[in-house]
Length: 495
Ligand SMILES: NC(=O)c1ccc[n+]([C@@H]2O[C@H](COP(=O)([O-])OP(=O)(O)OC[C@H]3O[C@@H](n4cnc5c(N)ncnc54)[C@H](OP(=O)(O)O)[C@@H]3O)[C@@H](O)[C@H]2O)c1
Image (cartoon, rainbow, N blue to C red; front, side):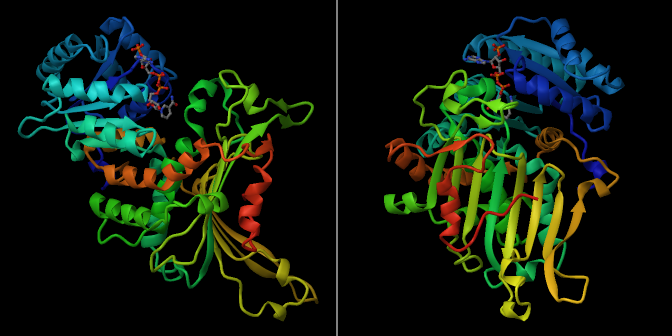
């Protein structure tokens, strides 16, 4: 879509849980930038819903405070006309007041009966809010208008609860009305995967088992759980990162070329790839291909980091995983026999998200005696964060009389574009207002992702021995290294 077309249609954006952290830190600043970019015409209005008592005027002040500086004229008018509905999320009176406010806003601002409900509340409120919207008659569009619901992960806690959530959402909304966010997909580099693969002809011919030896995905954080220990205790790294971000990035990276760039064509290919990932069902398979870990105290004397069990809100005997490594296989024509190694964790030595494709080694290594065997394989590295960009690593001759080969790299950085990358939340809010579902997750993708991670989580919940430990600021437990070295490979050092 051309940039000038990326402007919201008339619409009331209704944020539930508007008094919360996500709204203040992400949504309101993103709206201010969208307003400054001219993406929000005067027929877009903002309505907040939460239990915290606030008048419209106090809500306007709250919105204004969430952004640095005073914002531009359009942001000012968005804030000045913003409305606030106070009430409980399952109280029918809240929805009656919301209906009245929306009718007012349609009349005063020409929002045309179009609504986007953004559920920025704790996930357990998704079902009551959707059901209440349905009962109040606020979830179905009138002729010629649209109604959408945007929800944040987690989409359920396991396969069964994801199904229950879907059933509750379906009481009010059709699948086409539901926009499930994975903000990772809105990152510039992740979208660039599509350009890299399908706007160039040099990569696609080698994007298969004939040329690729293995694929590695690393999502590493240096931070621990901080003040979110209570939340993390019920989540863990598999639900927090693997079930959504990792499997989404993996499916875009490895899917078949879509027949068009129509959102459904892309989502069809993603779900086909997820279906081709062989779930680890047998206990023996899980034990061999899935590693969990938990960080213990570590770091340096000057920068000593607490262990997970010492963090506030964490059970001192907790077996929640703060690290996961998996070896996955994809049972399709393109990727059969190419292992995919995934690792993610907290308190690792670097904050980095990278996808690496390692290519097969050349057949005649002895041509360059003494140097070639310890040379890393050629690799294409997509850096999702930080320093978004691409690197192509290959062997090059070191200048001199001897024929020595050493690793060299061609690098592309996003900073070489003059245009700034929009924040992921700007992208998802505008896509939801416009109605472009490409970067949102469909129900069948959610179901399939749970199908992959659920057996492993169930196996771990049966406590198959003590959880492996790793010192903070190291790359996970030794079992994670063993997972890949037993195949004669090693984890790539993040670039
Ligand atoms: N924060 C982030 O950076 C972030 C990042 C990615 C995804 N998310 C997702 O975004 C959503 C919102 O996150 P958040 O951090 O903004 O949530 P939050 O601050 O914990 O909650 C948002 C609002 O919901 C209401 N609320 C909280 N607990 C409640 C309870 N037990 N019962 C009824 N109402 C309650 C509160 O408003 P009132 O008391 O005024 O009603 C609160 O201000 C979640 O689904 C989260 O998983 C958040």
